[in-house]
Image (cartoon, rainbow, N blue to C red; front, top):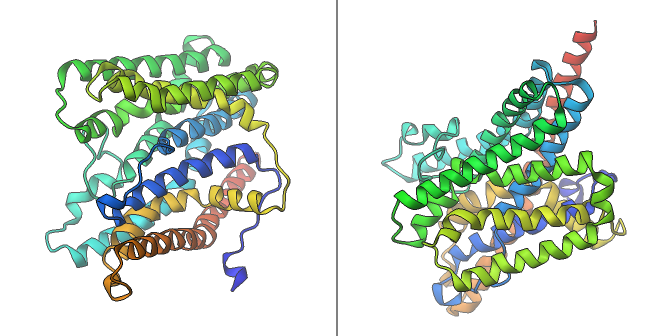
Length: 384
């Protein structure tokens, strides 16, 4: 039984980045689990942070680093870009489509008005490019941002490499600046033209669309650029940078919300960038952060980090909304509201962890192995 949930851990993993990913998914899972609690028992989110922004910047940092290294080694070409897309989409799409299909089946049998056509946009990630994300598969809004980032980044880099006569250094920097500025200008345009009545309006119009959030990933790419070309400087000043990042985090989390409103220009236009920059500044420190291996802390953080994508896909739409809300008549167990709330929340967390480990081990890993075998065969064929 123990071996069913056992995951092999690569000893070369970077603990600091695993810790950041673990914090990101933990913030998301904990907050979404509040749906199971009565309103008067829901805790305040005073210590929570925007876990999705953490994911965006970290993803841009890691994926951008992979692409930069590939281009620096082999140059920009159709083959390099194609390999990049294959690796990214083989990593994300099979598991996503599996969960999406399961959700469609569950909704088909539980919702008489459900039709496949009503959710067709989820199959090609067009549900929230310029529009508000629909209620079906709520967490998929951020994956849509990621997938468009995977598609656009190598294309934009190729264009800027041509513009700057194959200078990778300038191409990466100006690609990042271009996207960040364009998104900033677009959010400002939205701020001037769209009136906001509720916080939910702000969240759907500014917080959960591709065109308003893809810049967070580009801040991560900017971090990868700095690491690749100026790594010694990053390491030298990592302690100063992490302090500055924490200060910016405090400002974005507690100070600015105190003195601003969600309808203000700061919340609509600049708040996302401030959060992203605060994360960007802690990356050099976390990239060098190590811990004693074979400890409970190391294994726990690494397990959650490895299974974070499965956790992300499963925790809300499958576990929380279907398995927990539509499951046991909890009042039979106890008539104490607090006990029921704690029990439901604990079962929710346990189910999320166990099911995510199974999904990761028996579906994600095989899909990744299949991807690597296909890429290896293509490389071997090209060398013949």
